Length: 78
Image 1 (cartoon, rainbow, N blue to C red):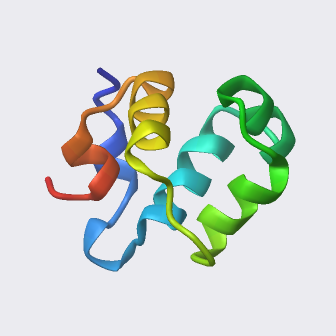
Image 2 (image 1 turned 180 degrees about the vertical axis):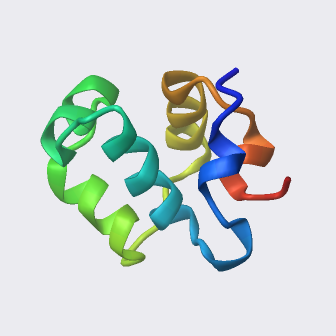
């Protein structure tokens, strides 16, 4: 697991969408690139990041695996 994740995010102020955006930018990916990798549209990634919608459990599993983080890190519970 990536050990620097928690040091870079203040979990108390971040939403799931903000965490997705942070993780995506850390890998230097566009929304379209992340979407293509995970099988979603750029619009879906944008909606998640902006809080219009939230990823379902299948998407969350894919995001956690892709970013090599724990669920606790993803949800900001550490």
